[in-house]
Image (cartoon, rainbow, N blue to C red):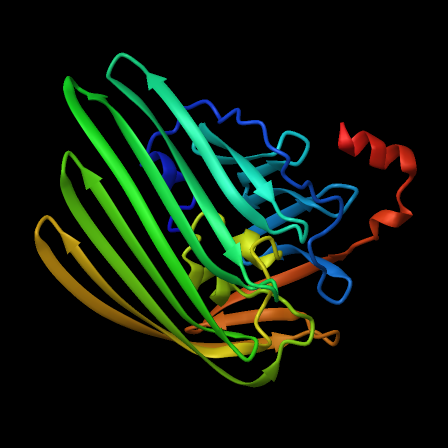
Length: 296
């Protein structure tokens, strides 16, 4: 799931979104709240919500990172002056179950055409247990024809309410040449209970959702861990251009909490990520007319 949207198009930024008809569920309220609140800032991200408490815009610094249109069922990722729009589906818990797109791009230098899809699977407790990405494309770049494909299989292991292992396998094939990358994360916990049920930056990191990690932290990809992690380790193997590489990194983690149990500061290897919040009203307090407008 690294580069969750751009992985689908393998670097192509102009395309048309899929137009499949579906009966995907549309959330009408926040997926979850943390002690009755939702974050407005998480590290360098700032978040905006609509009148129903649904996240609509995330900014990284001063730049818009992504936007969700619930009426259209789309998620748009912005990068520089370009944007990528994909179809998005939710289940009845409000978790994202699928992101898909198709593209057909042409300019004076290149052409590119293809499609891709990411699916997300949850267990009965609402924990993300696996995901799969497939993408295929072809085109011409500076007069040279090419074909490309991308596959990702990620599995997540939970024990006693905690995410303890993440295995992310990436495979990219271009003109028949295959590169592979496998990242394995193991997460350790202590006795600091996650009473507000808050999703952390660590959880997003080990899911490898680089350009949509904040969506994990507001709950759009399932439940949080029962306790706060105290450390995690990454081991990775890469095969690139016929050469093999391995490496590993370790990270210590600690948390400072607000009185209501929400995160005030999350430290990962000494780097602080600051959180701030807004109180969320329940959708039942909204007028019937406003709810009706949201359905249109």
